[in-house]
Image 1 (cartoon, rainbow, N blue to C red):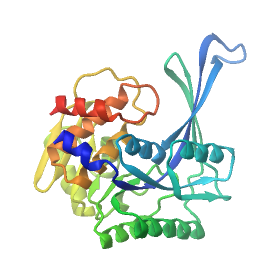
Image 2: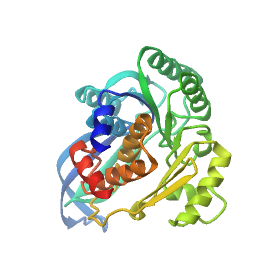
Image 3: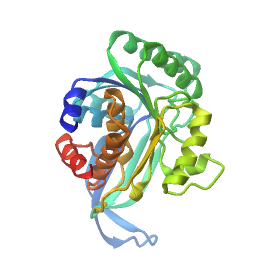
Image 4: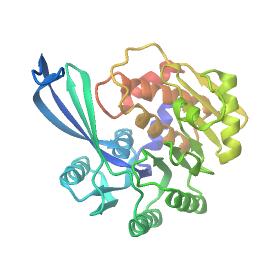
Length: 325
C-alpha cells in the first residue's frame, strides 16, 4: 500500500487555500547578558527566510511529488516581495495569490542560538479580507477549479484573515458541485465553519477549546468528542493530533487511536503542516483509516526530529510509515 500511495499521488494537483506567511530565522550565538537589561545578547550570524503557514503545506506537497496550487494573500511590502521570491524559487504557482495594499504580510521572526528558540516576534494583520479582496480571491479559486484537474482541496487556517465564513462556505460549495474531496486544518475563529468537509483535522487543544466537556487522549473520550463535532459539522472523518500521545481518527463507524513511537523531539514547528499534507493526499486516493492515522504519525514525527520548519521527505516517510504499521 505504501509504494502504491506514493505512485498515485505523483503529479496530483492540490488546491491549498489558506494563510501563507514568511518564516524569518535570525541565528547566532549568545555569550553575554545585556548590561541594559537582564536579557541575552544575540550575536547575529545568519538570517534566513522560509515559506511558512500554507506556504509550508505547499512545500510538503511538492516534496511528496504532488502539484500544489496556493491560494492566499500577502501585502505589497518588503516581506511580501521576499515571500513571492521564495514562491518563485521553489517553483510554486502564484496564479492563486493576491497582493494587497491594505494589509501587511504575515511574518514570524524567530531568534535562535545553539539550536534553541530565544524569542519569536510576529508581524501580522488578522483582519478579514475586504469585500473586493474576497471577490478577487474567489475568482482566482473558481478559475483554478475550472482550468485544472484538482484532486483535493486543503484548507490551511492560521486565523490570519484570508479565510472567513463566507469564503469557506463558497469554496466548499464549489468542491461539492465538482465532487472534489476537502480537508481542513482549523483554528479557533472559524472552527465550526468547515461544515461538510470530508476530513476535519484539529489538534487536541483546539478540540478542548471548542467542546463543552473534558477531552482526554483516550479512545472513549476522543470518540465522544468525535460524535459531538460530527453532529454539529457533518464531516465524514475527523483526525485529532495528540502531540506525544499520537493521533486519533474516526469515521464510517470505526475509530483508531495510534500512539506515537518514542523519539527525540527537536522542534515541533511545522509538524501540523506535514500531517495535513499527507492526510489530504491520503484522502484523495482513498487510504484506509489505519493507513491515514499511521501516515499522520510518521509525517509529524519526521518533522519534529529536525530544527525549524521543514518539509517531509518521501523516502524517510515511507520507511517510518512501514515501521509504524
